[in-house]
Image (cartoon, rainbow over all chains, first blue to last red; front, side, top):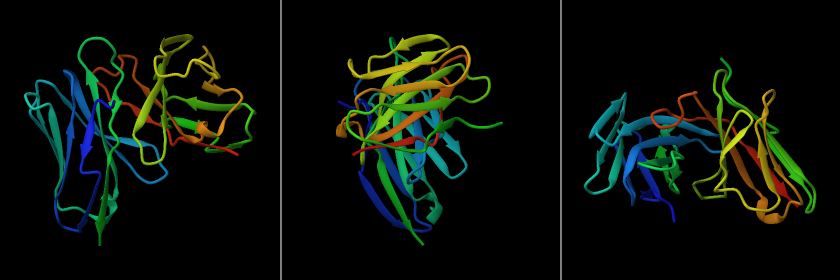
Amino acid sequence: SQQGEEDPQALSIQEGENATMNCSYKTSINNLQWYRQNSGRGLVHLILIRSNEREKHSGRLRVTLDTSKKSSSLLITASRAADTASYFCATVSSGGSYIPTFGRGTSLIVHP
Amino acid sequence: NAGVMQNPRHLVRRRGQEARLRCSPMKGHSHVYWYRQLPEEGLKFMVYLQKENIIDESGMPKERFSAEFPKEGPSILRIQQVVRGDSAAYFCASSPTSGVLYNEQFFGPGTRLTVL
């Protein structure tokens, strides 16, 4: 089964609203990464948060990590139509393989 | 600085033919990863290579699939005797020499394989 599972599967909002996506995982991690994928394109890295970090910001993006709950959230503030994309979390487990494991993603649609 | 390049972008094959997918990592990157993505699914790891070495192929099907990353030239993902279930988008990613532990992966645009 997937290590990271995003929630919700799909999210539809109006421009200017905030969008929150969640990611839950099962095993201990070294770091967690969020990626964006526009339709028909490759993935673009957004933010990497390490297991000893609780929050990170990048522009309109805010990522939190709660290792006790094994969950992370991605918040996009003041969303724009250009934010329409699929968002994936990827976990890198601690110990053993350093291969990121991707979830199924959240499909975000921002209506102008 | 060119990003990760993949070709072809689209590939159509008939059942039983061979498919060859190419990936040129970013300049200075010596780690290459291949992933497969089915519609409405996340990426599934297939294989992790460094120059002339397969480091982890735990996600690669045991038959018909092979990968290489020669000293010179791109990484190649080869699928022999393709079947309809092989239809998917195949993404390549590369990372800096220090690996993916604390580094992002840079993804190519993908190759969309359609098996008729």
